[in-house]
Length: 111
Length: 115
Image 1 (cartoon, rainbow over the protein chains, first blue to last red):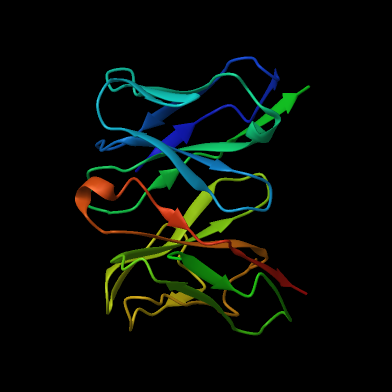
Image 2: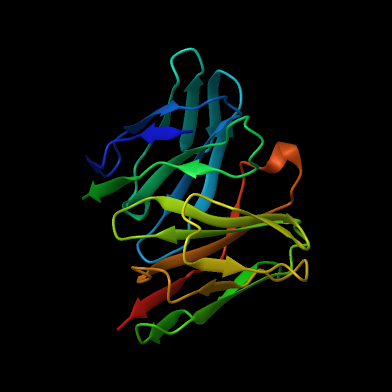
């Protein structure tokens, strides 16, 4: 099976940089994804790492270390609209073509 | 515009009644999924379907049923056997190609409250 751990809550100020960590345990591994969900809304896809290293998409970057079973989402130049929950998700190699999600990190951006 | 629609947005039912949640997509995606989300929690997989007329149980399938008679539609029935059905239900899809499984597209969700 799979399990993912991420902090439940993170607080940061507008304009700052914040890092949301995710550690995972899987019976195989086929990539780490990140999703954003605003209160009452639907999750939206942010990024995906299949290989080690950093992927950058605008203000958001995602990092993966497969040897450490660890990844993180980096948000730069924080804006108030970044206040949301962020979920990491993995897909394993057992053949199940579906994702397992972490319990989410609630990011609160303060002025 | 292409996307996923779920209806209704809010649904109230009495305990013991079956209820069916609608999910329709016009993205021409092969794979569709149902998730349940409880307050402050992550998404838990109920059922998923990779192709028409085929579906598999997820992690919390007990008390739920699905059908996939058309590519565009993947309705979820919450039966009276589901002990605690009050939750936020999210439907998702993706193209179904191996390299795209990690990117899922979500509908707006249905918030079900059982009275």
